[in-house]
Image (tube, rainbow, N blue to C red; front, top):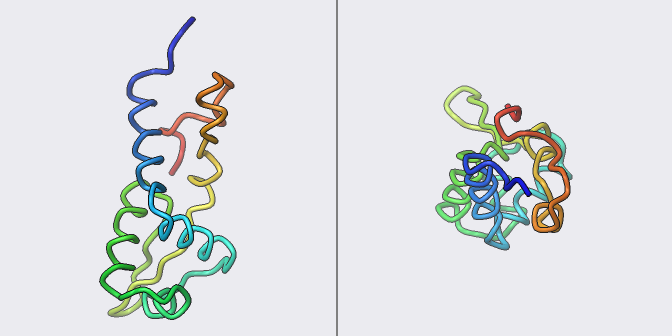
Length: 108
């Protein structure tokens, strides 16, 4: 039995860590449902969290490419990275040894 490549496992582990907080899961859901870029202020209003908290969550999600950042003038807008999120394997698939959707390296 061949184990999941260590580098791929490490990448998936970073994805799971990024989603290990309920607020980040909600943030991903919000951006996915919205379907268009949002400012931090819009996200704060929708989620009811402090701006600094939202910014920290966005930073973590951007590091694993679930969220993309677009500069608009002096501000930033955040949107879901549909390509990367579609690569996210379910925990059950990984644990059960089912094929993963794609390699993390293929996710932009």
